[in-house]
Amino acid sequence: MVISKDVNSTIGGDINQTTATAAPPCKAQFHSYDWKGGSVALIKSSKDTRYDHNAIVTHDGDKYPCLALRDLSSFRQHIGSSAYDKLDVIGIDEAQFFEDLYDFCQRAADHDGKTIIVAGLDGDYLRRSFGSVLDIIPLADSVTKLTAQCELCGKRAYFTLRKTDETQTELIGGADVYMPVCRQHYVSGQGVIEAARMVLQQKLQCG
Ligand SMILES: [Zn+2]
Image (cartoon, rainbow, N blue to C red):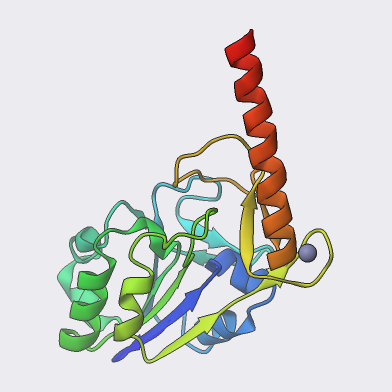
C-alpha cells in the first residue's frame, strides 16, 4: 500500500513474502528507491524475532537494514529529527502489529511529505480484520492484494490456515504454524481442525 505524499499498501503478505514470492510490486517499489543513499528507512515489528533484528532478510537472501520497534510513534526519536527530515521513503513491514499505524501514516504523508510503503496482513487466521491495516486503506494512493500459492492444490491462496491449536490472534510463526490455502482448502481445513478440537474436548470431558 503506498500513501503519498504516498501511502502504498500491500495487503495479504509481508515484505519477506512479497519479495520472495508472488508479489513483485513491493520489491520493485523498494528497489526503485536509493537504499544506500540514506533516503529510505524500513521499520518492522519488534514482536517478530524470527529473523535478524536489525535487518529484513528476504527468502532470496537479500538483506535490508531496518529498525525493529514496538510502536511507530517512537521512530522519529529513534533515528533523530535531522535523519527523519532527510527521509523520502519509509517502509513498514508487518503493519498489523502497529496500533498507531493510522496516525503515523497520516502525519508522515500529509505533514512531513514522506512516501510510505506498508506491507501487512489484512486478515488473521480466522479471516477477521487484523490490526489497523484495513483502516489505512482510505489514506492510500494504491493498494495491492497479494496471493501466495495454495500448499494443497497450487491454486491462488488468499487465506492462511493455522495448523496448531493456539487461538490467540497474534501468534508469530512460519511454515511450521501457517499454511497459505485457497478458499476451498481454507473451508475444508477449518472444518477438519474444528472437528479435531471437538473430539479432543470430548475426550478431556470424559477422561
Ligand atoms: Zn487449494
